[in-house]
Image (cartoon, rainbow, N blue to C red; front, side):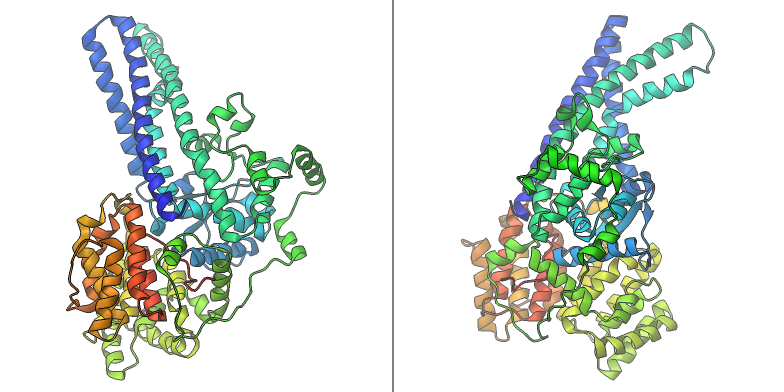
Amino acid sequence: MNFFEQQAAARRTSTRLVLLMALAIAGIVLAVDGVVWVATQSPKLVLFATLSSVAVIAIGSLYRIASLGGGGEPVAQQLGGALVPENTTEPGLRRLRNVVEEIAIASGVPVPKLYVLEHEAGINAFAAGYSTSDAVVAVTRGALDRLNRDELQGVIAHEFSHILNGDMRLNIRLVGVLFGILMIGLIGRKILEHGRFGGRGKGIGAILVAALVAMLIGYIGLFFGRMIKAGVSRTREKLADASAVQFTRQTQGLSGALKKIGGLHDGSRLNQRSDAEEVSHMLFGDGVGFDQLFAGKLFATHPPLLERIRALEPGFNDEALARLQAQWIASPPDGMQEDVALGLSGGSGSRLPGATQELSVTPPMVAAQVAAPAADDYRRADSIVIAIPEALYDLARQREAVMPLLLGLLLGEDEALAERQHADIAARLGGDIADHAVRIHQQLTADLHPMLRLPLAALAFPVLRLRPRPQLDAFMDTVHAVVHADGQVSLFEYCLGRLLTVQVRESLDPSRYARFGRRKPGNVRNEFATLLAVVAQAGHEDRASAQHAYLAGLQRVLPRDHLPYAPPRNGVLALDAVWEPLDALDPLAKQAMVEAVTAAVSHDGRVSVAEAELLRTICGALHCPLPPMLERG
C-alpha cells in the first residue's frame, strides 16, 4: 500500500477500535451488572451500576487522553526518557541524531524530538505523538550501545513509517482508550492496597469484598485490552518492517537489529514492566515478554521474532539464532566498534543540482513518492546534510542562534528593504537578534546553496520548538513583518512561513490537528480551484500557459466541473484560505490532489527549483510528506 492507502487503512482501524472498545465496555458492564444482580436482585441498583461503570470508563479514558494532550513527550517521560540535547557531543547520541536528521530530510517530515531511555539495556524504540509536528522518537540505551549504524538506521526507519502512516496517532489514542477499560480494575486494586490499613469491621469487609470483585472484573478489561492491542498492532508492525526496508533498500540493518534482540540476554524487554504494558503496542520489539507466555500468540503485539527475521532473510533458522546467542554470551556486540570495523559512516557527498536546474517529473511519480522514501532519497539526504556548511549547521542546533538564522533566510538583498526588515526585527525581538540576523544573512548569501535553504530551516525547527510559547508567538509575528516589509511575498518566503506554521505552531497544540480527513473533492471544489490557480500562476509567465496548466490539474480531480481559471489577485497569499478545508480531505482524495498539483506544476514539461519548493510545501502543509528527490530515477 502507498501512503494514502496506509492512511485510509489507519482510519478504518480507528473505526474498528471504536467497535472493539464498545464490545469491551459491554463485557465489563455485563460483568458488573451480573455481580450486582446476584448480590441485590434490584433492577434499580443494576441500572445504577450500569451507568456508574460506563461513567468510570469514560472518565478514565478522557483523563488519560487529556494527560497525553502534549503529544509524544509525556509518553517518553513516563518511561524515564531523557531528552537528547540538540548540540550533544556524545558519540552515540550524535550518531543517533545524525541518523534521525537524515531520515527526516529523506522522508520530508520535521525532525522529531529525541529521547533516550538510559536505564533500559534491552534493544527497543518507539515513536509517539499526534502528528509529524509533535512526534517523539525514543530509543533505549541498549539500542545505542549494541546496534551499529545500519541497524540503528533500520530501527529508526521502522519508527518513521509509524509516524508517516498514521499509526502513531492511532497508538497514542489507544493508550487513552485502554486506560479507561482498565479503570474499574485499577480502582479495585488501589482500594485493596490501602484498605488493609483501614481497621476491621463489617463496613470495611464489605468494601474490601467489593474491591476484590472490581479487581477481578478488571481482568476482563485487561483481557480485552490485550486483545485490542494485539489485533491493531501486529499487522501495522509487519507493514513498518516492510516500509523500513523499502526506505533503506537493504535488509541487513533491520534484520541485524532483530537478530541482536533474539540473541542477547536482555532482548527487547523493558525494566518498567507496568509502563511497558501500557505502551507495548508502540514498541519496536516485544517489551513485556508475551512471546514466552502461554497466551503469547493471542496477546502478542508483534509477530514472532523469527517470523520477522525470515521475512527479511528467508534462510535464517533456530540454529543460526542459537549460534549467535552463544557467540554474544562470550562477547557482547558493541555498535560503535562495529561501525569502525565495517566502515559505516555518512558521507556519499553526491553533487547537488544547480539552483536553476529544472526537473522532469510526472504526477503519478510524485504521488507515489509521498511518504515513501527510497534508498536514493536517503543518499540525497546524506548529501544535503554534508553540503550544509558546518558553521551554519552548528547555528541550527543552538537555541540562541536559531531565530536569527531563520530570519536571516528571509532578509532581502535591497539595502532599503534590509533596513526596514532590521527595524522590524529590532522592534519585536531586540537589536541583538536583528544584528545577528544580518550577519547570518551575509554568511548565508556567501556560503549556502539555494537548494539547501529549506533543509537548513527544517533542521532548525526542532530547536525553535524548544522556545517558550510567548517567544514563539513573538517570533512568528516578526516573520510576518519581515516577509511583508516590501508589500509582496515571494514563493520562498511563503513556503518558509507556511512550514513554520505547520511544523512549529502546530506542535503547541498537537491534538487539535490530529485527525483523519473524510471530505471528498466535490465538497472543496473552490479551494481546489484556488490552489491550482496559484500553482499555475507561480510557474507560468503568461496567462494562456497558466490557464492550460490549471485545466490540466483540474482535469485530474474534478473532470466534470467547469471552474474557469481566475488568477488570484493576491498571488500566493490566496493559499491561506485553502489549507484547513483541503487538509480535511479523505486520504485517497489527497492522492488525487497531489497528482493534480503536480500536473499543473509540470504542464510545461519542467519543474523549477522554486516550483519544487512550493510543491513540497503544499504536501507538507497538507500532511503528505514529500521526499527531497523529485527527479528520482
